[in-house]
Image (cartoon, rainbow, N blue to C red; front, side, top):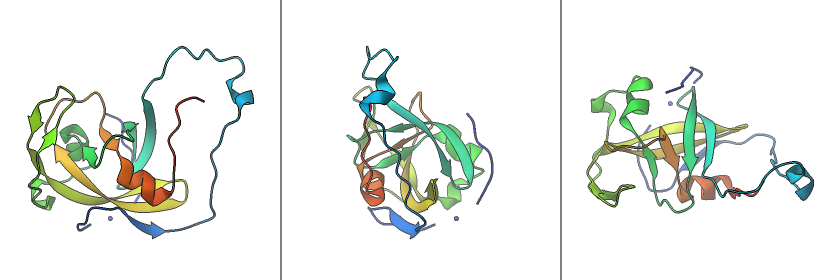
Length: 149
């Protein structure tokens, strides 16, 4: 796991925009594809600043209705079990098995100058990723994930 420190709490289904700055646009053109091999449609995996730490291995998943955090990251952020809010819905893991969440926690996620409060569901299940960012977060940012470039 890879985390490093920088700079937040509560509950609802959609992330909450905290701070707005100068809008940054990250875009690519077909020229950016020149010289690359486009054999795969790989998962979009990024580094995000979560709760003040740079967190690697965060998957962007347009198919996920919730944002998921796995125990290694939760512990790495020095969060305690008593910080969790009850979350009663079951989740379906990568293997198709039902996963009982440990709870939910609201944490700030920084992307460029934007900081969004995100409700993470903490799931005790195997994942090659430390967290999964889903549709609520993408919608709040007004972002579109695109794996072609």
